[in-house]
Amino acid sequence: MDKLIVKGGTKIGGTVFISGSKNASLPILAATLLTEEQVIIRRVPDVSDTNYMLQILTALGCEVERSSGTVRITAKNITSNAPYEVVSKMRASICVMGPLLARTGKAEVSLPGGCVIGDRPVDLHLKGLQGIGAKVDMTGGNMIITAEDGLTGAEIDLRGKHGPTVLGTDNLMMAAVLAKGTTIIESAACEPEVVDLANFLISLGAKIEGAGTRRITIEGVEKLGGTQHTVIPDRIEAGTFMVAAAMASGEDGVTLERVCEEHLEPSTKLLKEAGHSIEFSKNGTSVKVIPGTTPSGCEIITAPYPNFPTDMQAQFTAMFALTPGISVVEDTIFPQRFMHCAELTRMGADISVDNGRAVIKGVEKLSGAPVMASDLRASAALVLAALCANGETEINRLYHIDRGYENIDDKLAQLGADVTRVVVKEEECV
Image: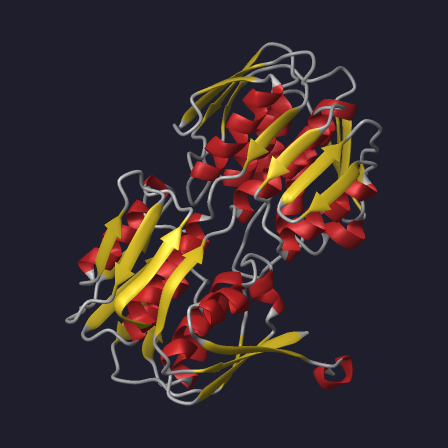
């Protein structure tokens, strides 16, 4: 169990390269179960979540070869039972349900694990699969999903309590590509990661229209082939480094390479509103962020794409903790996702949280302190705060950040930050 030691106060600068999207890679890796031919996927980030997914695919019978950021997968002879030992470690493992069901007619998957940031029910996933002919039984903590007579296209509305479901859309889309007839997904998620999955499936031979809108149409095919695909840049990692630059860089700022301007619009808009300089290259694949001289507080309300992402609210909360004035952050998707605020308060932040809403009064300085990461994005927020804090900050439970950020300590060190990863012996964790 590693921890990160950050000595704050050093200005960062230079260039950082953004990794492939973790949230796009996971369903794309799961979708390789749909074909028996070899698939090559590039820019798969080396993070624990993708490693868990590859372990699941191996356990299901896939031949998996990984070299740097390139993964080769052949799912010729697969089983339908995803092992609890790995599935329980990552919530996104639920996205093997759709492709397993479509390919083998059965999927036995344990209820997933993952970070604790509020209720993330699987009911919409099951509703979608049942809508195209699946039967679901729950026993011993396992979901046993079958389609003895095959899957048949239908019109399914996936609207949930807090808006569209990304992984639910992914699961249904993957199952529907091998179903008989046409499936229409209403109230579909339209995040860039859903579009990337659709493009991957289309390259396999699937017939999909409307990805990126609230209505996706899938015409089932009998069989899919092989392909090569490059994963889109990680918009959350990019947004995190944009906030790091606004908080902790010098007058020359920080340049991010391998980004997608369109995907970063919500974070870009808010950083500009807060008074920081954001300049994209003509093709939108590079961006330079320079901190403003007179930053000011803002208001955030999270909502499904293309609005402000819940996965960025913790990082902006850290920035607002040192921004003059009052800022308000409301998370309508995961109202309980404010565990980082207590740790930021330990560092001297002035934050009050009530019923899914945080009010932040900017302070002049933060002080280093031992803090505990509670989930993936919360841990990123603590790292950002630590870059600016006086003294040394010890961030424990670093495995949370390793779920979704590829070599974040190395990337920050390359920008000039004073960060050190420390391996904690097992007996020290007891």
